Length: 173
Image (cartoon, rainbow, N blue to C red; front, top):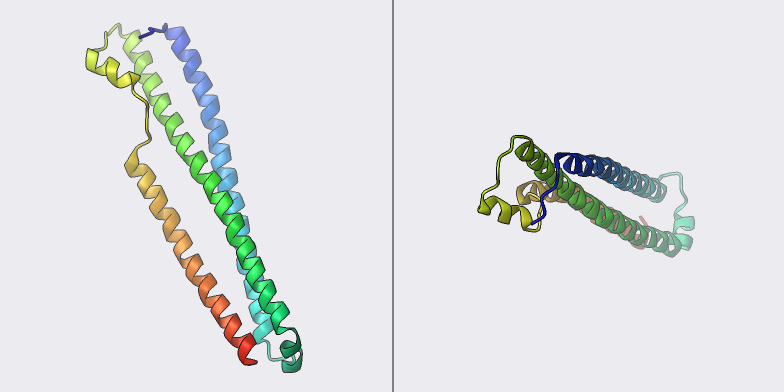
């Protein structure tokens, strides 16, 4: 096992802090992107649904273009879910790496304090330091639960809205 000086550890700590800052920005960017996609989709569905159910729109016109409207709604919904899946996949990866960097930062800080205090590590601590780090499963599980809690109503919204649009368009009001 390689022992590093306090200065080397501090340099690694600063590098880790820079990486952490970049990862925070990446997580925030992906969260913002996901929010923008979600808002755009909800607005699109609201406009299409109001167009379909509007009393001023002619039933004759709806009959003529119902397959176009239905196809458009289904294609946009499929595109939305593909886009949100890709953004969430990137967000999950960014969040995972952020959590790893937090752990590395904590380990570096502990190492700096240990070296500064002149304490020697026990064989168990040395062995634990050599293992591959994994993020706290409780924090990740909590984050995944929050993500699921956000996406579940959105899935229900999509299904109900698509069902309502299909019923209205195919039954001709």
